[in-house]
Image (cartoon, rainbow, N blue to C red; front, side, top):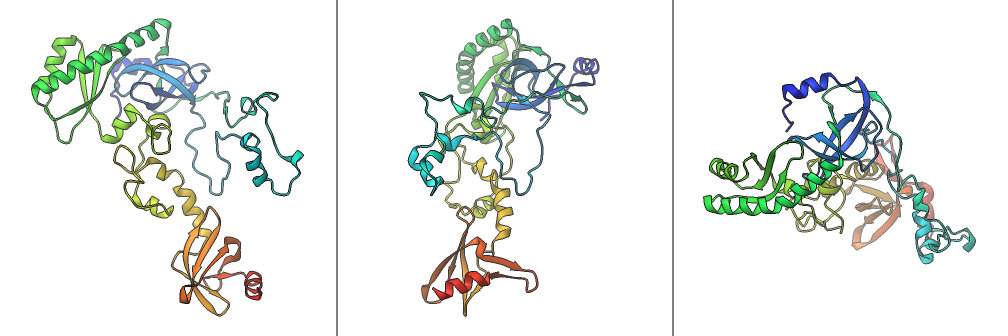
Length: 364
């Protein structure tokens, strides 16, 4: 849902320059992301007052947005924002497993007492870069102003009032016997308005509730019905991986997730294991889905047949992480071969085992 732009907003937009810098701005109250423009360089962590879908509110600069939105490049194995010195920080035993056969002096090492932390200058851990000035086109909104100390003090004061507003609203909900669950309340920084977020299984007639709340707070009241996934995004929490919810800390874009993604990654189809606290499928199921689809093109599909010597064996399982293919034959025999031992014969339109590997395997 996009915020309706008023005539005053339109006049401000017309007076803006045609070139500027665009940034990814996060709203701390709803944890929603938006793309906003400004006429000078800003750095991550800078507090601003920017338009949101609910009105003018506090925002925090996350990163420059002029490089966002690039499509996935097939075959790319260089993760972004990952530590490039992770191996040097591992215990000695784990480093020896990675560098098998290398002398001890060749193993990368890091001593916290003696050495400077490599993550301090690591481009992966600190992907900082200067934003680039671009032409501002389309519906990109402009940041209203940089947050001042008075704005931050007011934001802090309003945040302390939100618990009391929640208590009052809950009492009114019980009084009117409404079938709804109040999630959170928020005072807008740039406008005299309170937003109450709630969940409900059915449509709720809250007109009388709004009248009561207006008589108490004497400012504009807005009630927003959200879904269970949006509730997790607003409140946050710990996921099964032990980290913050992705929708709360990584992105507010709730992309559709299907059970097909779990099947493609050979994950358990137990709904308890692949569902988040919100009761929906885990958002992270979609992160590696494209990689699995692309990588499986280099493997024979499960259920197909491969000829090993004079025996015809069935592809029982494909593990793209270990690059292994498990085959099953007659009389319960099983065989595990590496992915490098198979290839697709374009002439016969079939997957076949490399002759050198087959000869070596049959000779043993």
